[in-house]
Amino acid sequence: MKIAVNTRLLLKNKLEGIGWFTYETFSRMVKAHPEHTFYFLFDRPFDKSFVFSHNVIPIVVPPPARHPVLHYWWFEQALPRALKKIHPDIFISPDAYNSLASPFRNLMVIHDLNFVHHPEMMPWLPRKYYNYFTPRYARKADRILTVSQFTRQDIVKQYGIDPAKIDVVYNGANPLYAPISEKQLQLTRQEIAQGRPYFIFVGALNPRKNIAGLFKAFDLYIQETAADTCLVIVGKKMFWSRKIEKAYSSMTHKNRVIFTGRLEPEVLKNVMGSALALTFVPFFEGFGIPIVEAFRTGIPVITSNITAMPEVAEDAALLVNPFEVKEIAGAMKNITFAPELRKKLVEKGFERSKTFSWDKTAKDFWKSIEQTMQQAKSTK
Image 1: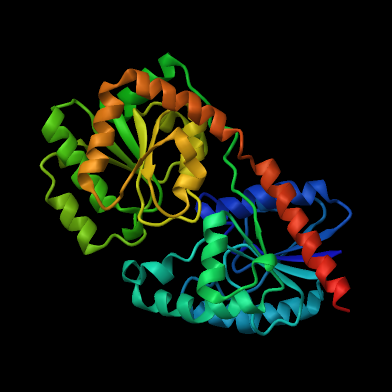
Image 2 (image 1 turned 90 degrees about the vertical axis):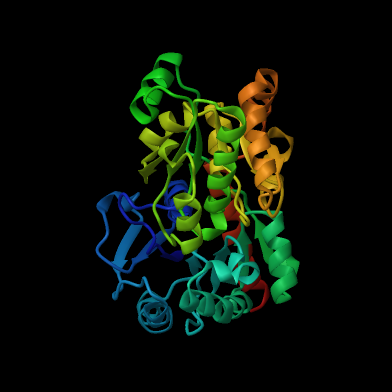
């Protein structure tokens, strides 16, 4: 079988959520199925480390598509031309895009529909693009894969897609994430926060991640407890809005906020494992991989009680209303001053983390591919 894959988000040292999803699933899938040929379609020169096996044929399809106008050109002009040369049995797009011009059987992955619910949290042009094309992509797809039951139901509700056409495949977490030694914890805290304990946020810094609310909650927490604690923010500034900037500038204790930028997993596992807790309280998530990573490192989790986050965390985290700053601050206080609660959450987190693995994700993803091909046979 010839399998074409949109791999344009496989970028060396720049992997974000969907890029990691693509990396973790296909690095396993191509090795598990050497009898098939995988055509990896990049939009720019690629790193050889992404050619995971001998059965991967990398193809560069210019131009680099990082803007809605170029998205349209790439998916509706350049990509269909490349696919016609390959003539694949199936085209897979793991980043929520599709090609309306491609005549080939296709499976697309939709991670969430944040832009439908919070359009104000995105720049104007990408928002317009997603809201116009995503429902058309979804209807064009022969099958859709998504990462939570929440998002599956959302796709059905928003776009009227038959639920039988949508498979749910949970994300995993990098096996590097594991508890660290007390010595490593003290060393990391010294390097990151001059030896002080800290809460940690991991993710792209954009409005839907509720960074502004987290800044306000942390300020309130320090004000009410006088704790010698820091807040470590891990991630790149994707859409650093005026609201986020205002919240940060208005902080009384902004000197306690530490920005690290993006960190590779080899470093992040120690930085996360040394934290008091993960404070991950977005307004909207299709899954929330940092929750599982935190569970695996053995730290408590504070996360939102809406969208997919309760589905992922269940009772292994403190669930808070992300719109209520006092609730977030209260959860931080509980983590700091209730050691038994902390211990209980860590134990439950370890147990909950066993539900998620990239090995299982890759296997279930392959089942979805087989289901797509089975549909093709049944409709002939």
